[in-house]
Image (cartoon, rainbow, N blue to C red):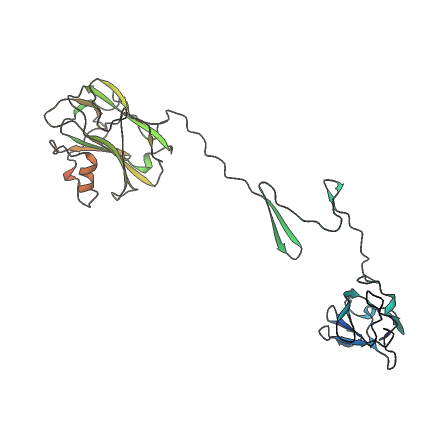
Length: 351
């Protein structure tokens, strides 16, 4: 062990720490020869009237240079006789044999370190950083910095997910349009007093737009305005209603198709996805009137989409009302449709 001597500790006004004392706390448990040195025990070193370490009796501690592992140090704090802090706490080392003059300490500086401390230069892109004593990593745009502990720092780039690809205008949303001039046996169907449904199952959908239109083809002008056209979303492979969206033509929910040709709806803002089935409903003009639309009566057995119609003179009930009071209420198709027929949509397109 090494005997501590000297010191001549003073306060900032030049007053010696007469009869004060030092406390030493080893930085970690260590060993020497066959002995274990406990770091948790605070050592008190008494000072005399001159602020020097009392040398009679002598006061001894283990030198850091003989302790294992290497690079231990003492946490040293100096106090006045009244117990007021006057020095430190500072990290200090004690080395050598015989005596050690604590007056040789350079406050908060180690004497021996293995391996020797190497100079550190802090740079930014090859140029010296503005501070050579502190380096603070700051997150920037799309950069996340995380302190993982134990000296590890994670730097990760974060980018928003890519925008979905743009779907070209006019793209078919599903297996529509069918070409009623050359597919199956094209025909016309009367609309006065009839309710029609064409279902597009989720597995028939090819693209998933947020905005789209549908079309029908009028073969004989209608004598009066239709009752309604709408799309009813249900859960996939289910008749559980999610919502009912009206389909308008020229801003009207009850248009008069008094001329022949293709009639394309206004833009409908309803996100299409693969988690729902889509029932397109059509209530014709009142019973006793006239008018026909094109249909395809062939290929009714196709599993991807089909159509239902029936109930002549349905009391003028709009299709959404018929659906809500029957299918939507857990009932059957009898109140809203009857026999199968062709497909009356001639277009379902992205806009």
